Each structure stands twice: as structure tokens, then as C-alpha cells.
Length: 355
Image 1 (cartoon, helix red, strand yellow):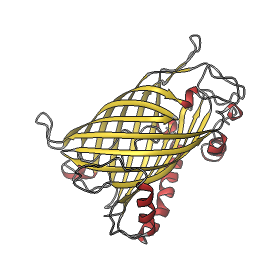
Image 2 (cartoon, rainbow, N blue to C red; image 1 turned 90 degrees about the vertical axis):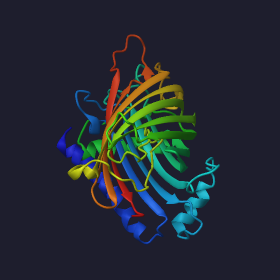
Image 3 (tube, one colour; image 1 turned 45 degrees about the vertical axis):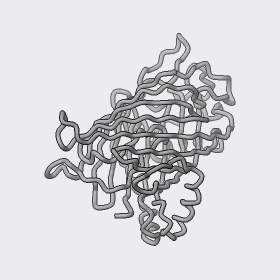
């Protein structure tokens, strides 16, 4: 990847993370942590040297303990919002955590320099959303999270302006010219659920490794799907890394976990994940655009693999990087040449404010 583009992305993540760290100092200790994430195909460039499809995602989230003793204004607001999403009942070792956040996704065809409609490729689309969620430990290595996302698809997402600015001012790349053909305005509401089972003491693996299995489901717009996956983790093997995909299922886990790697590697965690999803609906492919209706169809089975690492930069911060390979999530017309795989990267800055 071009070094200047990588530096620009890292600078943006760290600048986004800077101001909440100062704000957290005045908040009560029930603010657990903050997460900032950039997903972009420039961050995963290799032989798949592309700028298309799911091309950019910006995501931020804050997590609070659900504790009645917490009285800070941020905690009270989060508790009120968290009461909207209360699916985690029964006997829990600890009260569920509450989190909320916001984000933006950008989708484009393979050639962003064409101003005319491209019905044989996926539509131009932007998505701006807010999210409120709840996550809990179930005991026995089980973890559950539920989140509600509400958002806007279409020009109100401000995706067109952001991409034009980023290409012009930051990476000095081709002008995206096809935004007049983007998806029409729509409201979006989506419910996400993730269950994770962690096996951390498997005889066939060394002490510093574990295996996580996850089940995730999304219902509503913009996407309805179900997915199964496995993750191999070395280092902080009890930490939930989730199954993050386009801002869904972020995998917020700010609890303190021991690192089982020896010596100088005690700050490092590495993981590899494989997932297969069955997709019932994808508005970013099937939605109605301002131009002619796209001729592509959503693929019902989508496979994703992820390699990533987490490096604890200090007592309260982690820098994470993931590279993701995803099979094409749409089926083009028979005579339209297109790649079968998209590769993109994710850069995260995580701050554990409760430490």
C-alpha cells in the first residue's frame, strides 16, 4: 500500500481517538472504552489493487457498564438508550454492558471515473447510521451481543462529499464521478445479534491459543442474513473479537484479559477467522437508484476470511489491523467481467478508559 495513504489513514484514526480520551477524564469510571475504526480497500491492497464495492467505512462506538451506581451524564444517557435494547436476560455473572455509536459506509462500482450509470455493476450507495447495543458474558466462555441500528441510505448519508474530499485532498486519486446515480433515499432499521462461544483450554493447542465459534444474524434493512464462523486466537485468547463486517457486529470487549504469549510477545494478539453467510436481502445491491435499475443480483452465499493482530501500545490503548478477503457479494450479468474477491483492510484504535 502507498505509504502516504497508510499514514493518512492512521493519522485520521488517531486524531478521531484523541478527543474522547480527554473527555473521558471528566466522566465517571463507568465509561469502559472507545473504539474508532476505518475500513478501506486501500488498507488491504495487494494484488487486488482496487477502489470499489465496499470501499470505505468509518465507525465509532462507546461502551458503558450498566451500573446504577454510575451517575455521570454520559452513563445516564447510555443507560436510557440501552434500555431500548434489553434482550439479555436470565442469570448473568455481570450486568450487561451498554454501547452506542455511529458510522458511515460507502459503496461504488469497480470504475469510479465513469459518470454514466453502470447497470452491470453494483450501485453507488452511502449509509449513515447510529447504533445502540448491549453485550454480556453468559459464563462458560459464552458471550452475547444485540444491537439496533437506525440510519439513512442515499444522499443524506453525505458519502458523495466525503469520498470526493478524501480522493482530492488526502490520497490525490481519481475523482468519483458517478454519485448522481446513487441509491434513492431510504430509512433503514436493522437488528443484529451475535453469539460467541470461546474454547480456551483445548488439549491439541498450546496454552496461549484458543478457538472461538460465532453465530451472527441481521434482520431488517439494509441487510438480512445469518452467518457461522470460527476464529483461532493466540495471545488474549479470552477476548471477544466478534465478526465485524461493514460496521455490524463490532465485537466490543473492554474487559481485562490476560495475554498468554510469552516474553516480548505479551503485548501481541493474532487471530485468523473464517465465516460463511447466507444472505436473504442486501439493500446496497437490490435498492432503487436515481439511474437505471442495476442488473446485478445479490449472492445468497458469501465467504469471508480475516487475518488480524492487536498490539497493546500502552496500559489503556490497543492498535488493531485486519485484512479481509470476501467473495463477491453480487452476481453480475453473464457477459460482465468482474473480480471474484474483494480485499480490504480495517485499522482500529481502541481505548480502555476504565483501566
